[in-house]
Length: 83
Image (tube, rainbow, N blue to C red; front, side):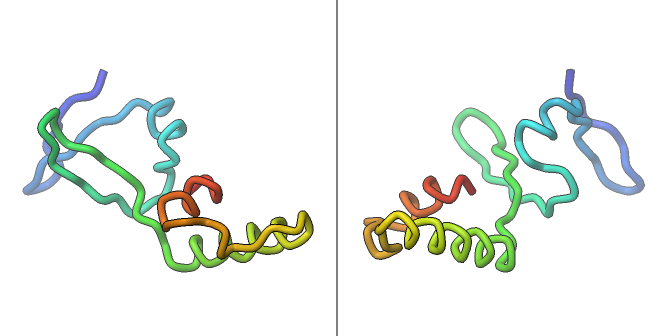
């Protein structure tokens, strides 16, 4: 169970380890988005992480005869990169 806790002069959220792992939140800077359902917590995409993933995917696709330009938008590229 998650809950709010006091952390110094602020408030923190205690998140179970299996949620941290499943959400790829280990050692990540986090972003928060307020939605109608509550608050969405996501890892921020680090530029280096993104560049490395794109480079690796580009090399894999080139080996299979595909090109990065074949992705129609950023979302489909991120899905293909699994980021």
